[in-house]
Length: 314
Image (tube, rainbow, N blue to C red; front, top):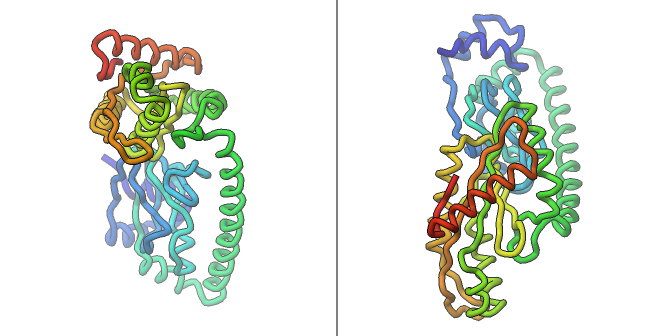
């Protein structure tokens, strides 16, 4: 059972606030549960709340929801203040990285509290908020330029997924974060079934379109905080951060089903035969390295191909 009063007192925004004030806030709102991948704030929609993060983790993304996260929010922090105080749309996407609980405080309540501290303090808050927003816009512009340059070396030109270079740099860092936070990381190795035969019968252009189709499947089926990469040739690797094995199996089966039902066409619009994929799933151990995790996923992929293809093994 959660003690909401104690949780609110631990947040940065409400620290040292008197209990009667906390009780007033609790009378007007209750905590919200967020599932992994849920979008809490978006620049495309007006925001009416300041959200206090009670548990879980949120990530902040500029530009698009699937852009790399630029900041991670932990319990005790809050989001939504700038758009409330300055009466503007949010400047970024805020997404639940894992199952999370937030406490929403409506803008009317916030504005009532702010109105009680006097016009000078209220104007100071607005001035500070606009300054922070201007800095945020500059950071956004800089990061977009960096991402455009990074894309040229870290993204596969055919599928639009991350490439092997990105994986070699990112996977050790992801594993370090996993070990530090005592979390897990699942790796899903994917191979297009009988791709050599497909490539020989449909030509290299047809084979390329099959790989493009797999790339689209992965982009449309993985969650916002997952990472899909082209590992090499007809092999792909998906990283699933902080994901239990049972949940990863659900994601893997969703990918397998989507690939099996994906329509493939040539560049001139003529239909091409469909494809199936085999998938091997492995979960990190406390001493896992990039080599051992990929090796474990590859071993499960070998099982999947040996046991009939078009299936998931873990």
